[in-house]
Each structure stands twice: as structure tokens, then as C-alpha cells.
Image 1 (cartoon, rainbow, N blue to C red):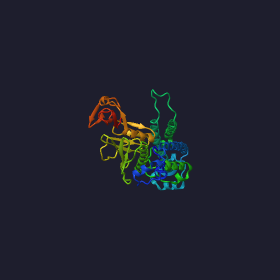
Image 2: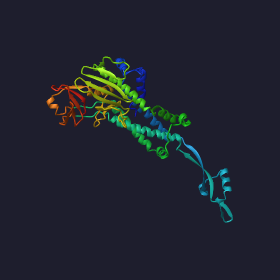
Image 3: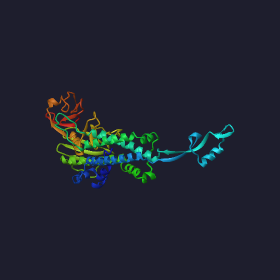
Image 4: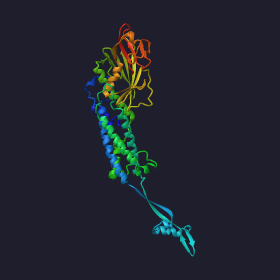
Length: 415
């Protein structure tokens, strides 16, 4: 599944923006307004449409191969009873003459009961046909990922909806379903059933004469070379992080934050000041940044944001430090890792805006009510420690900035 079109991401980072990765984050913040950031989600959707179109052509080619596959003519010497053999060649007849075990007496005559025979076998399980079956299985797994992913993106109905909008996600799902039906047909053929029983090929695919010269097999090989590739996951994650850092810098600048007085432009920690908060942004690992929020009149909160190349973050690298919240952002969603899978799906800009707003949210709430009830989930499960109110039901945290007033800062919002 192409959750990220890596070519678009690489072009964005290294060409369109002409970024030098050794530049400090402070220097990037100063130049951020000059940078045009494309939507990787739109690029990914366009790439998926192209990919499914290519799969449609590929499956039609594979069906043609199934009806007329390349085969290997193999000759195997066997011993058969005389009545099962139509005729013998000269070499086979000489083999019978010199093999005394085949001859038996019948009255006055010696007659061979069995003969040596060169049996010609059409062998379909050749390397190139195994490659075609490998490609079928790979495409099938990819289509399953597409189906699961895009079904999760379908709009759902609630009581406030008069109707659900039409979108290209529905078109993609219909296309994937049609291709999955064609895959099921292919897997039911004699060709696939016969070859899939053999030991599959593994390792790097060898460009044999058939794969490079035969028109049909060459189409399959070109598809494999173009769409099936093994990317440097860590490099992609680093580029995705930089892409989102740029979006975050744009968002905080739009909120009125400016470089703090006395900022060292060569410093890797970005220190910004705003009307109500000071914040610090820092890259703490390959694929993760931290943001420290320091409001006026309250203790700071520290947040960790990881970046993932898909929607599932597994085996997370341990990062030193204590954080008040931990979240993972992929191209398509924002997931809270310190709660029961709180998840937001939106455009890249809205994901960044949602993350920032959840850390910089100010509100006016009645102290006498919301020191007892959670303003997020209404639960009467509030505990207080050092001026920080925590909901033991949903995990949200907030602070009354003035002990005698109703101004509240949400350190963390969990729904």
C-alpha cells in the first residue's frame, strides 16, 4: 500500500523546498512563509488511482499468460511395459538390447517385457511462471490493504447528517473490489493451483530472457520493478518528520508566535513566544519531536510527537525523558499513544492544527463546577495535584491559571 508516495515526498523535501538539512530549525522558522507545501495526501490518492489502473492492466496480462504460459520441454528416461509404448527410437532400442533384466523367455523366444523409453514432459513450474504467481500473491496482499484502509476513510452517518457526500474514496473501493474478484478467479485456475504447490522463489528477481524478451512476461516484470520496491523506512520516516515540522512551523507562525528574544540562529532548539505561551520545539530522535509548552502562571507541559509511515506504530523506540502526552502522526491520522487509541483523521494541515490546539487550548470555565466535573467527558472523577486537575476517566488534564478566576489551560485533551 502506498500510504506515502515517496517520490513526491522526496521531491518536496529536496527539490521544491531546496532544503539543507544542516540548517537550524530557527532558520527554517524565519523562512517558512516563503515555502509552498503541497498536500501529500492528494499526491498519494493520485498515485493510488494510477496504481490501480496499472493493476487492472497487469491482471489482464496475467490472464493471457495463464491461457498460454511458457513451458519447459523436459525429457525423462523411464522403464515402461511394452504394451504402453507406441514405438522406440534407435537409442532407446539399443538400451533395451544391452539390458538383460528386461528380457524373459516365452517358449522358444526371448521377448522384452519392459523397455527403456524417453518420456517427454511439459514442465509448467518454471522460474518465470513462479514469478507470475509471486506477483499475484503480492498484488492480492496489497489490494487487501487498500480495501481495509479506504473503507476506514468512508464517511459515516449520524443523526445530524442529511446525506453522505460522494467522494473518490468510494470509487477506489469499488475498483479494489472488482480487482479482488479478478484475483479470486486467477487463483482458481489450474495454472495458479499447480504452480503455487511448488516451492516459491525468493530473493532478488533475476531478469531472465523470458522476463525481458517476452511481451507478456516483460509487462509483469516492468510492473514489479516500478511498483514493488523496498524503501529505506528510516529515511522515509525522517523525511515525513521534516515535512510535518514545516507544517507545524507554518501553523505556530500563523498563531502569532515569534522567535524569542536572544535566540541563537544556530541552536537546534526552536524557542518561540506568543501572547499566552512560550514554546520550545526540538527533534529528539529520528522520527520524533518534543514540544514544551510554558504558559504564564503555570508549570510547563512536555509533549512527544512520533511520526509513522503507516497508521500502525509498532515496537516504538524508547525515547529518554518524561512526557505529559505521547502521540503518533502518520500521513493520514493522529493517534494518542497514552490513551485508549484516541484517533483523529483529517488533512495534514488539520492534523497539525488539531495537535497544536489540544496543547494550547484556553477557555473560561466555572471553577466551582469544573474542579469537580471533567469539562471534556463530564465524569465526576477529578483528582488535583500541584494545581493540575486530571480526569481519571478520560485522562484529560487542565489548570486554572488564576486560583480565584475561571481562566483554564488544557494541558492535554482526551476524548
